[in-house]
Length: 342
Image 1: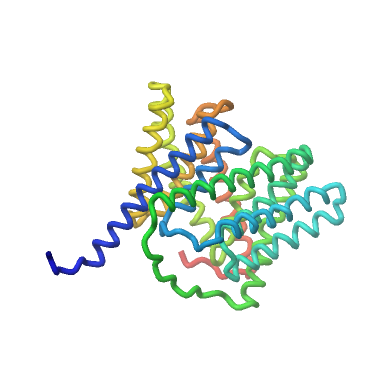
Image 2: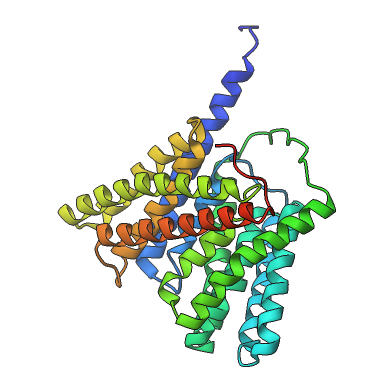
């Protein structure tokens, strides 16, 4: 029997390959279930599965999935409260502004990024949908929660089927002081509110993605890097969009369920390899999210043309990035944030 020690890199490679297989199989399964049964907001399920099976590819502690679902349910309850307050503008606007500020502040102080995104979606999207119809806003929240619950169940099943290795050591986060976090939160709130009011006054519910993207990207340090992050997202969306158009054309050429399943599995494995091994893994992860959104929105029963939807999505990214750049320039001119040295 050999007594040679197995190198740590061998173990790392072993667990990484298991994580890639788990990622590919889990996302493909979620997409096929969503495409087959098409429950409300089904296309969100594979996106959540990809987020939770992605790097570092380690299972969360026992009970964490239940706590996450409860946490998201609580965040969505905040959005539902805003929907109820919609008829009372003098109460609704200050309440929404305060909730936005508290979300940005907690994000600065280390709140889970997924919970932050869920809060921003609840605070910004639910009331906008509620303007169309109150039941639409509440139905969106319930559909979102159902899809998240299915994603959490699938994630736990795939971690049970293909167990993960030891969790990597987490670096100690460096958080800003309370004063800095307070100031940055107000700057982010001031950046988002004019656009938010514009959306309400003009009823541009079709471009809600722009509003949510601005809120998410505004959290980048100093705001000035938010526009740079937006440009990075545009590049990532181009990568994912090109892959989605190729995927769509192949599926049109061979419109069979088994081919769809095999193509989805192969695509998820290829992107999983890039996400887990490439230095640009985050770019590929964003691109893969774009691919999942476009595949879901073009292959489900209410689908459409992939290339057209890609152009709309890229246009929304450009609008969000342009607004961030303009906001950063105005705040720099006012001396609220330091001028960029680029």
